[in-house]
Length: 460
Ligand SMILES: Cc1cc2nc3c(=O)[nH]c(=O)nc-3n(C[C@H](O)[C@H](O)[C@H](O)COP(=O)(O)OP(=O)(O)OC[C@H]3O[C@@H](n4cnc5c(N)ncnc54)[C@H](O)[C@@H]3O)c2cc1C
Image (cartoon, rainbow, N blue to C red; front, side, top):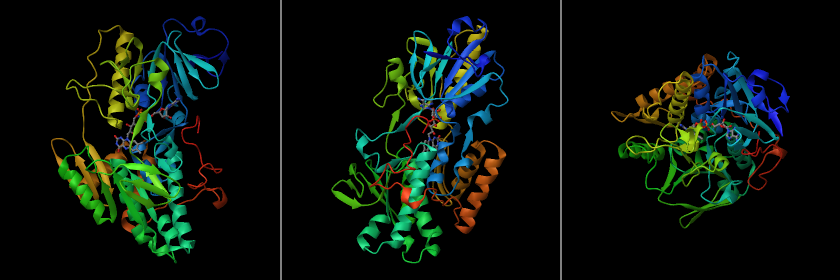
């Protein structure tokens, strides 16, 4: 078994048990996952006398709320993702490791990596997030594309752009109609945002560039098993979102669950709709962190953590973000959104520092909801602050400002702002690039063609 060196022995991989090498005083903190939660833990531990090993299977931190803008060719990948190393370059006590974690040996306090190496810890923080899930129908995955990673987003972008290209050359009207039918399953914020933006892409951006097809006639169909779009929002905002989507030409199908997805169709209720592009934003499944620890989990695999966000029976292991469920004092679970993961990350950093100081046990974690936002299309958004609700153009401006504010660094903020200005003033979307050669582009019939990254593969 290879034992990966603790941060202060950077670079070396040791065969010597870690206990002989680490000074007793220097706490070894391992944080798995450099998403919203994990990054906040590392930030919160700045200045603490700890060695941190920061592990992620990707080399970047991703701003998932704007992934749909990459998928719809509005933004480039580098505008919503940052190399993890670049975020912690000024923290000598933080060692970044690109690796896929496959388990935890809680007895020996080791994190297990896919290549057989192990990383020792005194305190472990698991912030490994969640992925989309198909309600027990994993066989739909090649046809119904999920949206969680940059690869997912560029795969969807490619699929949408290629569908328009193929429709332009297609003589058979039925095949052309199927190519120009875009189906989104799940009418939560991401489904609504995708549907509105694809409709705008087809109606506002593309028409003048195609000669044989009227891209404005493309069908965008949003399917939702429940009775409302944006079910997490108050009813009046849901109604506004529904009306706005319909104004954009989106066909919204409520109260119908999808029963089949294939290479050339989707079936919902008693309808079979011919399509070549299905995007799946309907369900989530937590990372396998609960399985690694044999910890109690809910039905989607989220660890049921203690009020101080530790894993039951393991005060030295914290778990946060989308991979856990924790009830607030009101008994309601914290939602699976970025602010919850960030608040949990900040809380865990504070608890670790309290423990280092030998202070009393902390108050239980308390989630504070700051508001829910969703964009529907240009100058249309909804915001629910709890104490105030907004919709329309003002909500859209606030939505834009909030998202730009939460990006990392001035370059990304400026670049995103300029791109949005271009979309809104000129209907131009600059990221409309199909980056694989035509022969290599994966399609529903050929989902594993070269260039089709299996998004959930390790280091994918
Ligand atoms: C398309 C989309 C849109 C969203 N929109 C919004 C929004 O508008 N507003 C909002 O508040 N929230 C939104 N969310 C939810 C929000 O992004 C999540 O709640 C948040 O990212 C959770 O943070 P996390 O730290 O728990 O997990 P993540 O941010 O997902 O980070 C998990 C990290 O762990 C790494 N990882 C996972 N498994 C392993 C492993 N085995 N080994 C090593 N590394 C691993 C991953 O690579 C990743 O970097 C959206 C999510 C998606 C997918």
